[in-house]
Image (cartoon, rainbow, N blue to C red; front, side):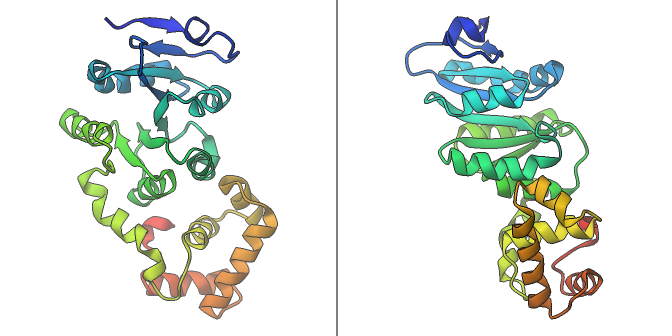
Length: 240
């Protein structure tokens, strides 16, 4: 039987609060649903609830401090995190937590209408999958099933662009994924300082990457980089 209990009931000492759904037991695998809106959490939970029968239980978490507490717990195996949960720093945080907990399976979900390139970048930096709650019930159920079968959960309409994103370094001039991500933010009008904040990098690191980008394109102005990147297919209209 499904139960809902406060964090104090199930963990004792952790000060952060969340709701746990599902029966805790021996060898129960815990899953985080990270979103600051309880209604959206419940919406996604409807699709995850059937997996309680497979020995999963779910933490409904509303803030990042709670996320940090539970992401590192030994029985936490999976994360569903809303794209807006970390605010502007989503990609930086996905990269950070992916490195911090490499065994943690992360899936980004969204209720907003994201561009395909943005959704693809979330898949890449989370090293996981993506669910749009704007999709049909069948599509969402299919993607969730992929997650719980430990497969990379990529909706059909994103597969081609995710494949392209994964092979960005194959394009000339050679750009690393980090350089490509920085380029995308710069051409959208972000300063180097704002880009560093978003990606959780130092300003010096971002400036070094921008210098490398200039060297690779053989120009010294971002307008020239943009023109060449568009012509070479490294950036599309959707990136702007």
